[in-house]
Length: 193
Image: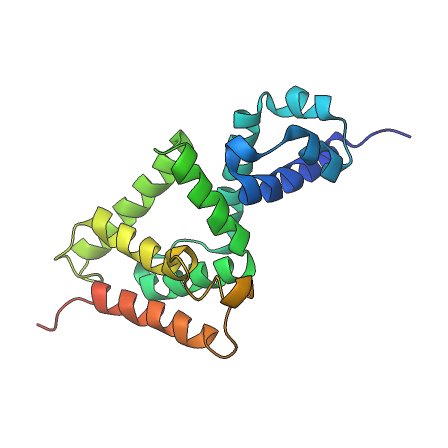
């Protein structure tokens, strides 16, 4: 029976995502990743190189998936912020992965920088067209939108942590999302003439 290298690569990336989200780069173990993926540990090195390169591949995949699931729309930043919030509710471990990345490997990769540059330019163009308040620099608008979208997931002891790690409080999820969307609306709406 022929082996499916694409399926093995996908299993390795899935297992590595969970491992890195739980333990970070330094704490992640290649043996656990291989065991979880039901793959030979040697294949990690064959397909991805070292552990840091595997982390880069996991992060790149997460960014690409996020861009597909939540396409950026400078014309509707409140809607975009709400969609990012929803995506993180469905995949809270994604925020943990991002936090580990910021702790262990600050700075942006080439693809991350390109993604942000494109979004910043889209915000700038929307500001020029009068669809977004031009009183805040485009880079700051984007940073605030992303920061507000992620705020509930990174706040120490915040709602995403819940009591005893139980997660979101019943009935509050809608209110948290509405606060994100309304805050972004207020920040980005051009002032009345």
